[in-house]
Image 1 (cartoon, rainbow, N blue to C red):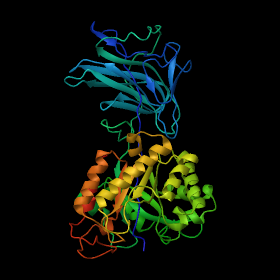
Image 2: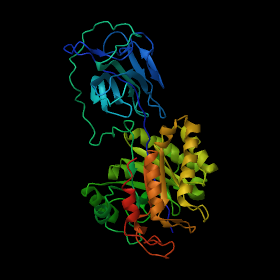
Image 3: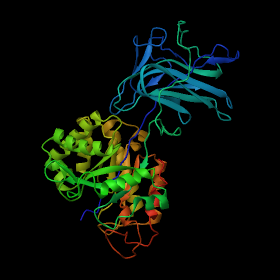
Image 4: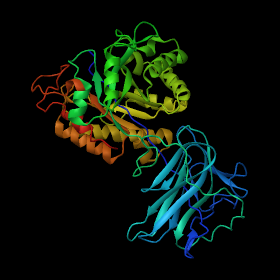
Length: 488
């Protein structure tokens, strides 16, 4: 019986630096406070960049501009710390070119454009706090979305103008009108690095376990997203729900339509512990990517979760590589798609198979958004909160080692997928412990929080490991309600 499922994540994100422009009719004390705002020094003087350079083309004004290098693991962030006055209003602006370019103040206001084929101006206003004497401004792109350019950065407001950069040669520039690039319906939260993605999406299964009506659970808990399990092989490389139900037109699609009609959305999970899976039954990465694409296209998916378990996928390195190769293909063919891999763990972090999966994700350029561990089935007797934290910290350290990420970036690529109540190996995750896990996930700004499963999120004290209840005393949908409080 398939009782376990992964969680996702995502994504992690990153930052870059920007500035503001000097308005012609500002008070005498107003000045552009950004050092080397147009990069006319010919170098990155005044800026700190993870992967940046100065170029002569394309430019917005003068003869130089910033080119931010973006890779699968680097957003090309550039930052600059600027002295400011407390309790004072400022405007930060920059001219940018590229896809998913961000401008903002670290820990404060930010803005972005999803696509700027030619130079467009980004602008954001903010007010400093009492006693605040400096801000860090940033510019950056987004993972694997291509290089970006920035020019004529300005921070407009009272302060001491920088003296480290020579004056920029006057140029004839377009009027500084607000950016009119279309914005996504859910822009990144301003309190986190722009572009950071967080989602609570517990698993829901329509094949057994007395599946509840999704709208009932959504109304009772506030949850907006579900991970639907499992997409398997219906014979060869043909995707079917649970190897039995047609991809479209059945109960699964009816429930997906109901979730979306109620203002929610779904992810679909491929694989799991048991059953006939697509990974071993598609001939190669291209064929597997084709199977994934059928599902992505059928449901216009924004996220897919690949639950890599057992000897046929997780411990089979040929299939591991096939899955990673397929994810690389669908990521390239579906801009904006987030990919999650979910796998088991030890109490201290990834096993040898998990470490190999992470290292191969980098080696193959798979560009995985979220690495989700399932911190349960350790063998019994564990404190499930403590073990979950220890496993997650171990995963964070492995991601740092493999990708060279900071703590914050590594956490932003991590998900947790627990098992509510009694696990297969008689461990118990209580309501109180799951609340602790949620709070920990929020404190570290993880990408995703999930559990197996909503079907089991009902009381049955002493019920053991069954399909339709948790085996512990609880309220209906209590784990789901707690998960809905995950904000990252």
